[in-house]
Image (cartoon, rainbow, N blue to C red; front, side):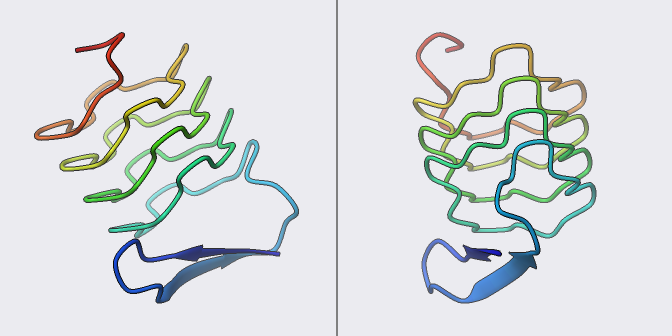
Length: 101
C-alpha cells in the first residue's frame, strides 16, 4: 500500500493498493500539491490528472501518459520525462528539467 501525501501539509490525498506506482492507473486523479518526489511512475497513466503544485522532483515519469494533465507550478526538476506523453499538458510556471528548458 502506498500513501500519497500533500506536499505542504502531509494530508493523505490518495491510498494506492499496490506495492509500486509503475504502470499505475491514475487518470483524472486529484493530486494537487502531492509529494511524489523520487516516485517511480514509469508507464503510469496520469492523463487528465491534476498535479497543480505537485512535487515531482527526481520522479521517474518515463513512458508515462501525462496528456492533458495539469502540471502548472509543479516541480519537475531532475525528473525523467523520457518518452513521456505531454500532449496538451499545462506546464505553465512548472519547474522543468534542465534538458527541457
